[in-house]
Image (cartoon, rainbow, N blue to C red):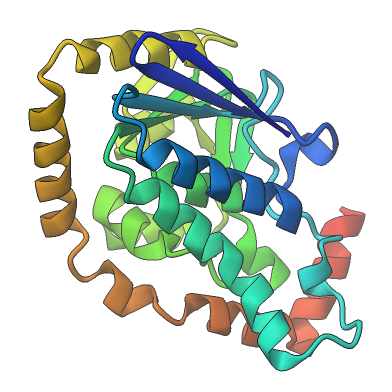
Length: 251
């Protein structure tokens, strides 16, 4: 599911589940977390590009994943499954290298959450972003809500999450949710150009500045989102949420 390419000091991580438009399941989450942990100690890599495939970054969380099923797992096991995405995003957010999410096609829900954990986002001009969590009766988790609010402000964050407005590439750029718009199917190529520009700077200084910016900007993020996985588990079991998921799957 993971392909790793190297272009000098630039690493390109491509994930391709091969089905359901790259929807996340527990196996893909684990592999992406492991990949971040492996790259963390690589002193040769200075910039990391994270991308899906040319048809989609990700369709979000797979609604057939084990976390949605009541199949006799213990409370601790279920809580662990709901927390894996939180740790995935934290692993990518805390990488010492500069990270760039390259989005072709579309990015939905958990895909948006993972993109928000990266330093920058590049989106193809024919792609879109979509956060439908409230439509299926759950909150936006994976630690994404404070990251989203930091980028677009509280009013726009409410529009994205509560009204579930799809954002075109241009709207996402205008709102500050992405940093660059590329030509169709060109998100990775644009991200590579930006990545090499970063690599022209002294590597140790880049890492120090990134750490300083994140320490300031993200200081209170965990305080406001530490329980979002628990909230998602709770809200997802409401009768209204179960009905909403069924309606969403039929639509």
